[in-house]
Length: 355
Image (cartoon, rainbow, N blue to C red; front, side):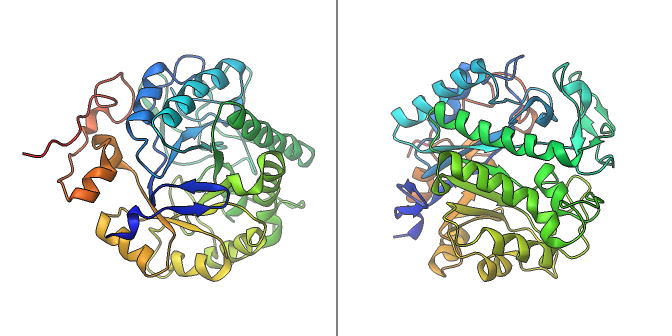
């Protein structure tokens, strides 16, 4: 029996199995940043996962970077997410909300009228993004946050965590990977600050530590996880010494009762991010590495991770856990419907039927 199907506790999150649905942007939110009824169906179909991590959700209007992505900062958004959480729980699942502040990885026209693109430093991301008209454009130049404004951003994350729990979510995950705001504070090429949030490794880690602590104090540390990807260059990232940066980050988070580290384990050849994480973090690890069931089980059996997350396999295989258990073949997703659209390519994938 594969260890993938054993129960496990990640902090205060008790999972029926170790198969985690990874967060995936699907760009199907309503015009006011609210998840639509089909979103509840989409996640409920996949509730056999031990844990679902939602798509990235902006914690404040400034945090939105892409079109048709959802937020959790208005009453309407919270109410719509409650429908999602209720549907997943009714199907026997567990779900946490990933909080994703895009920072400089954003287009101003994708945001609300009263929002703005902000970042640690006024350095534009060189990765083009899609605007609301479906055309790629260069990212907007962000405004550098003033020191006294950072506490407000931390508070926005805290409020978003409270809103997520009010919506029925079992916890939250801080998206500190993929070149978004927390990673922008961590990285030397995007953080040129000279105050208490820039310069030394400890200063560059300070924002993430403060956000995690604020959310933990608000909803319980054991309901708060974090996603990281040390050494990634996604969204124009280039830290001078990622091993040292993330050793400092993880040391500062370890032993404080947080639920888990969700590690995207696709590092540069010279950096073993899983070994690094295990060396400096004492809590549970969810590993994400474009895995199949056998490799995921090997990570868990070897004690390198407590759970494993799967992204695109969950898109076309709502019954992924059952397929893993039976050895059934996996369907492939329709790439044309990954982002945007309606039910097609979202809730209409069928479950496997044995011949």
